[in-house]
Image (tube, rainbow, N blue to C red; front, side, top):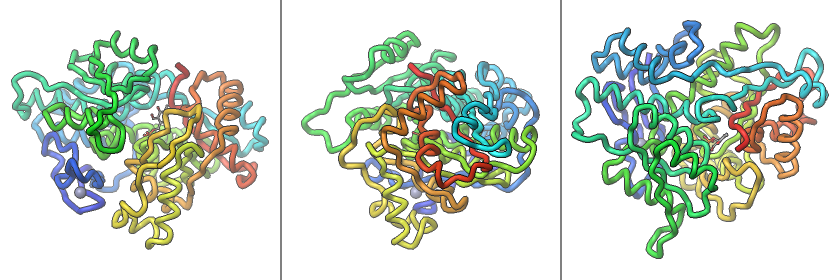
Amino acid sequence: MITGWRCAVCGASVDIAQPFTWRCAHSSEADRHHAPQLVQTIEPLRSSGESNPFLGFRRYLAVDTFMERAGITDERRAALIGDLGQGFVTTPFERADALSDELGFTTDGGVWVKDETHNVGGSHKARHLFPILVHLLAAEESGLAAWSGRPPLAIASCGNAAIAAATLAAKVSWPLHVFVPQWASASVTTTLRGLGAQLIECPRRAADPPGDPCVHRFREAVAAGAIPFSVQGTENAWCLDGGRTIGWEMARHMEERIDGSPFDRLFVQVGGGAFAACVAAGFRMSGISPKLHAVQTEACAPLARAWERAQSLGGPKSAAEHWVECMWPWESVGSTAADGILDDETYDWLPVLAAMADSKGSPVVVAESFVARANEVGCRATGIDASHTGTAGLAGLLAIRDQVQSDERVAVIFSGVRR
Ligand SMILES: Cc1ncc(COP(=O)(O)O)c(C=O)c1O
Ligand SMILES: [Zn+2]
């Protein structure tokens, strides 16, 4: 059971029944270096068997406990999640035989690929956002929301996260403001407008502090009352609730459907870090944590740098005390085909670092040639039409293939469709 949130940095706690606890109470405009984490009791991970993971694993979701504490009945909670969550299903997760052969794995070992390309919005991102929307609707329904008109949802993104946000917001006609750079791709902006989102172009202003102007405008909107519909835990920690469904699905599938030994390794592409944090958190609840390899590209690798720095500052366990010494924006972001993981800062770095340390994993920084090859071989051998960002975890495996035994079992996630 989930009881609340506790910040890994400052220790501030808040009860799960409290509505709209998007950020740590001590997080401010000047200091976003806070990391609320869910506090929960240990219990065996089981699914009810329903294909929609938000129903199948409902009892482990923070948002379900939030609703329960708001006085919403079990039946109504299931109905709310079931209705709003139409389209979410347990995504395919199978051993990729041709890919495993091509990479030289034996029949005992191999590569298992989780396919998120047909998920709601074409990527895993909607998993992060869905419970935030449920939280809002539940708050309205139970009288916890004091607004007269709905405040807009806000997100700074011009990729999968924005599309996921717009897809979900459209389901309930909740106004959504998307803060995008001037160079955002026309196909994405057209899709977003088609879904009813309002786009706000964000050129750099002379008075802007360093950093992404889209993030500055997003934060101003939130300060003025918009709801952070964000996939970064530092902007909305509740995104770390629903993202865990992917880890739960993978862990349950492993236990129920795969004979023999559990996974040895898990390669997860890392941008802002919420994705890897959630996959790892989901696995951890099953009691089995394969070695986590967080994969970044040479174009931008702040997490690998933080990992190195943390080793000399008391180790990953005490990294929370050393945020500024370990994690800061990558100075010279290069270019890569995996452009969805070019976040100059790994916002949710603390849980990813902890998960790598606990599982005896490590970060992997890949050259662009591996990014390209992973996409080519990954898509060809599986028939999945994923983007380079989506196959970037596989690039990590290719890069350290010589350190992986041929009978090891490896899991990767093709997290987004090619656009
Ligand atoms: C397809 C896809 N995979 C993975 C990621 C990385 O997720 P995160 O930013 O949470 O690390 C992204 C982020 O944009 C993405 O679009
Ligand atoms: Zn805090």
